[in-house]
Image: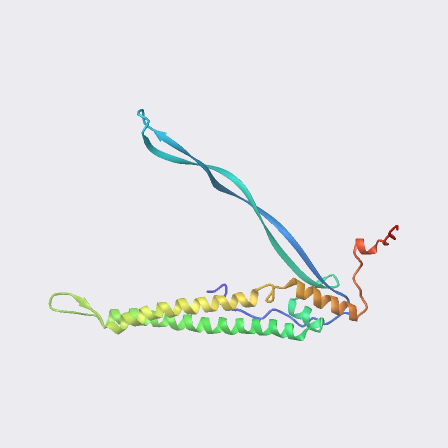
Length: 213
């Protein structure tokens, strides 16, 4: 828990510089090798009776695409919350802020539950040992509530750890709203307001030829 037990909000509050907003989207192709079954070989004895089979495998290369994106003000990469705030999309900026604030709260609550669970577990173990008794036959017994406290503490600690980790992950997520098209639309509206129109595509820049009749 030491590595993700101190979730905090990312630094935000970058001021607008008047530069255009940009969204960079890139797709990375990753390859992997896996073994695929391509057939079977039958094994027979000298009488021709089937005694077993073995499978044939071969390596096959597969691929998958991963889309990554980042937002910029001019040439400077900025946080998504600042990006939407500068673009005038306060609703989306507030959604990101609320998402992260909830993550911090979850992290704090989870840590508290984990600590309480650990304390209950230790108390159950220690008290169970100190309050244990032996009967006339030498059989040791302890109060059932100590065992229940130790077991409940373990469960509570695991739940608390899970909640703390989930909250930490929310605060560290790169894109709380993973929608590059939404960001591109916001950038387009903002750039139009400040007079920064996007460059025309190559096909649009070419003059259209008149059709011959």
